[in-house]
Length: 69
Image 1: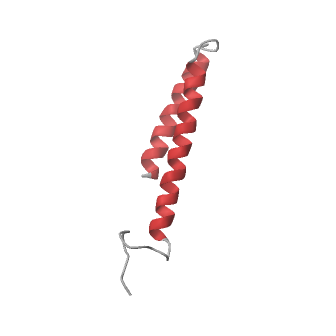
Image 2 (image 1 turned 60 degrees about the horizontal axis):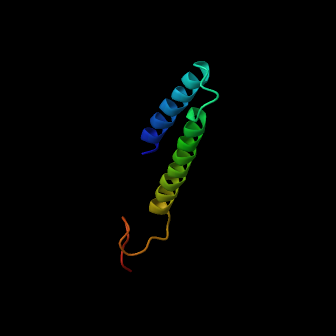
């Protein structure tokens, strides 16, 4: 999932660079680009937390890998 996220982030940054080079400095384009990057960073945090939770020693009922003792 993080590889997919990385590809999306890379494309978003390339779009932002092209907007900067095109001189879209006065309209809402850069603000929307930054908003999307903030959204992507939030998604990254969620993905990383899910991976950490799935790999942690303390798993609760209903989570993958949980074994009843």
